[in-house]
Image 1 (cartoon, rainbow, N blue to C red):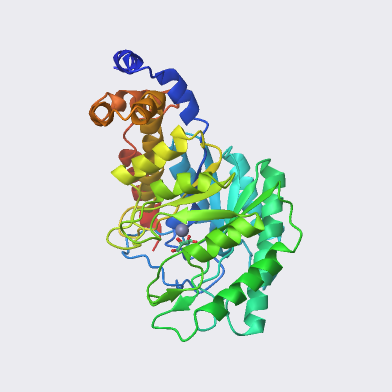
Image 2 (cartoon, rainbow, N blue to C red):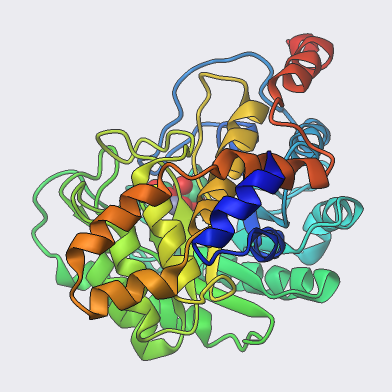
Length: 411
Ligand code: RNT
Ligand code: ZN
């Protein structure tokens, strides 16, 4: 089937071998937090910050060893180049009394060992500014309380140091994504001052003197959260301007915009100005619901913008969703494979030809060709990609076996 698909694509001027080789080189950063419903190891497990997981599927990981084992199993069923995305609340403290403003590289050494064991491409990192007692009135870096702001500034600086350590250990730069849930449920009396405080906090964090070759700092905007419906301090305009003026990077989460705004359209807008654009790929159903990523039209458009603009290394692709209603390993594998499928779909396209049709204003042919691509034997190339990596389309049976043998024993 692959040989025949290869011929079909070659008639379109598409080299399937090149596509397969290119796909294997595009890293996707896999988030550890789907494994335990964003609970982490350093708190009481109560998720705050206006994000939520729903469902109580059995077998959620309860500690580092369990999460590591689950991720190991999940990684074994994922094709392609993988990175690990860790949140600071997943520090492995082994009973040590240390707060988030004093986390050190050693608290993440077990994650480095794991990444090395798994042969991962690298580790990305996130300060955790939610689910903590110092989220005063739901605010962190924009809090009117200077002590609170300073705590979180110190936390972010600690995270930058840890990120340098990840980069040193893995040999690839670490993306540090700053997301805060700060905002207000109802009509604020002052929209500017909280943003000025956030700006000042970010300035102080960036002034710590981190190594820009090793650490890529990104800022993630958001339009609203649960209980933060009326105003978020870290809005899109705020962060895009902050990033542009301070030489850092924007992170686009495709659940964080109004439903008719598309991240696929924002990627090329930012590529016109930035060397690096970070992504959180999620699936919002009616709102920022963080459903498991599936192969959908918008995911394919996102992948096309990455591939046809030669940005497979400039765009830092990371997954970000959390579904507690289904098997969590399956959620991870399904989303990671969906991202890879969308990238492969985008790679199996003669973009030069389509771009020429656009430039020649032949919109009739452009429409017809784009429809033709949808019916080409994509599945046969995907199957070949999997089989060359010793994988099959079916991952569910192995996930089920793991569920019976491991997850069901967790009470
Ligand atoms: C929340 C943001 C943020 C989180 C993770 C856990 O809306 O998307 O990226 O999902 O940091
Ligand atoms: Zn996100």
